[in-house]
Length: 160
Image (cartoon, rainbow, N blue to C red):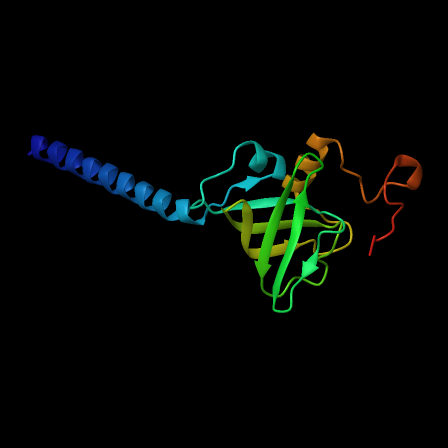
């Protein structure tokens, strides 16, 4: 009787381990489709990803590059101060989207152009995603929007 309980306990532990392994694999597979890696324009320029890869690119909308077409298609360049990547987006842009403003776009590279399926802009005048700030700091072009003019910042102005 005692050997039977021990055998049953081992079977339950083995089944639980297999179930846990299967659940982990299923979660990992499901999350792989939902994870979009962030890249700066410099990283994209150095090592262009395959056209099938969906990722996020972030930086500042380069001044003088924002072109709104006759339809809802808009083209612009995203820069981190080290490199600029052309972006094309068809759709309605966020209200705070503009030149010299931080942005993050989701999409893929096609023939050297980042084809965005989603474009995000700052939700207020001072916010910028951490990844974009880090990329701009790495290139030495980040300016703290809360800094005073003496500090080389924007002087608290919205820039709009």
